[in-house]
Image 1 (cartoon, rainbow, N blue to C red):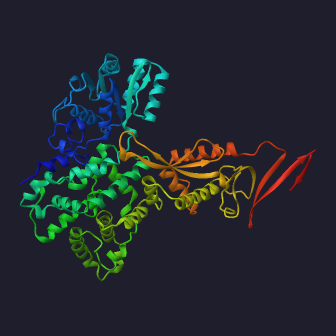
Image 2: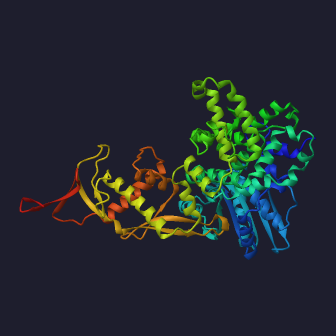
Image 3: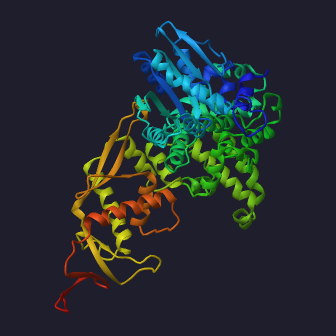
Length: 581
């Protein structure tokens, strides 16, 4: 007995040719779509805006951001289309509830240029005529269409500003009121656990429960394993997606769904599942286990097709399964797999025994050959996704996998931190800033200020530097600020900002910046950093130099680095004479 839901899951990713449902336009008409789709708070927010008054809504962003799905949700909310009804290219529907028409354009990006201008014009005029509109377009085509219609640089700059602010409020462009939502600025990470929960819904797997081959089926085994460890699996998955988001590698909704669906099935079909003996049964379940599929592996081998999935390419680049983990000694030396969830342990133990038996008397080969190395990586993947983690151990795991500061950052993002945590974080940031400006930690502990010397680029550390200013450490504060999302309460979060006494502006400390400052404060300095991060650091340094530089005076100060610490020497010039003090 087959389960059509498995075929549907296989069609959601781009790791094979059967991906007809990877696009929202195709998904909507599939009967399984209604069962897995997430009701987005943004859609509810926009529906409320439509109730308030006539409004022209524009949804823009990247391909796969869920724009068309959002239009479907809003139209369904007002009962303007039936469940799984395909959206037309564009249409105008009268709403009894709103007592006005809604004109929608499914995706303007795919239409001829002349038609794009015409549809944009109609969308903008809808609110002026007492009706509303929903227009979907990728960002590039939207900008180009506005340029063709208005041919006005001021209009383009206003549109770009609205995309950047993403306020969710009605604004005016050249006499036209619009509510623009830039989906590329929406945090999709919060959707992942909701989406995964829907994919795991029990009623979707009823046919698998009745199937005679279920005890031999790797897909059914994954379903049971994932469901039995759903909380921890979700924590790891969402933490990885958060890491990508904060490092400018945001996944679209489509890319997230592609990764999750592949992690469940590995594109294996019901017809390919065979009834095997116990040994082959275990091997098949291991090869297609979610712990391997999530990372783009089938067993101990990389799946080349899976590398088409963005999240998998990034996971393989990060090499998380090559990092030493907390339970490695227990696994690989004591052969104790009790840390794994029991159903996963039943696969790990026989696989470990089978593949290591041939190395029992050749320990050197076990340490150096490729197959044992890949086996250890596979068991680490199981440890990552299916370990019996508590809150403390999963925090240590995430810090080990991604960055020592990552778990702390997640905590800062979610919770109000106390005075002690703020003080410790502030000391770390100040220490890193001291090094960034001075070039050494020498004298950091004994000085109450951060020196601002003139540094010549590319010349290495200089023992004698012309001093341009100083920042008193007491001028530097860290403040935690709550960012409230209008669209989704779950998207609301805290951020940390650097505040100095002489500036009204603050400097947000992103994960990338916090990670960089943390590494510097510990003495690990790398010149390879993200270009946007480098630009942000240079901007911050420039502003600090500007407000904390010395006023013009006859006294010149020189910073001299000695074995006993930095020493400031004053040079006074008076009547062609120099005095050193």
